[in-house]
Length: 72
Image 1 (cartoon, rainbow, N blue to C red):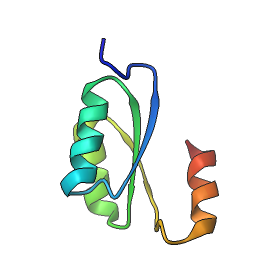
Image 2 (cartoon, rainbow, N blue to C red; image 1 turned 90 degrees about the vertical axis):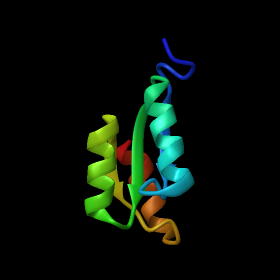
Image 3 (cartoon, one colour; image 1 turned 90 degrees about the horizontal axis):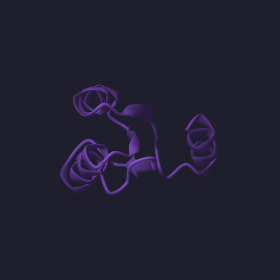
């Protein structure tokens, strides 16, 4: 079992760079991962690749945070 097996993780900005690397590591270590980003297509591809859920999110919009948390 991975170090975060059974945990729920939300990774914003997960379509590249550090965010994507974090999402991949958490998924590999057993977390249930949801990734978010503004780029729907890239977000969908990363999510499919790592077995995660994905949602579109603009982190600068406060009202979207409640929607994301409730969806997870």
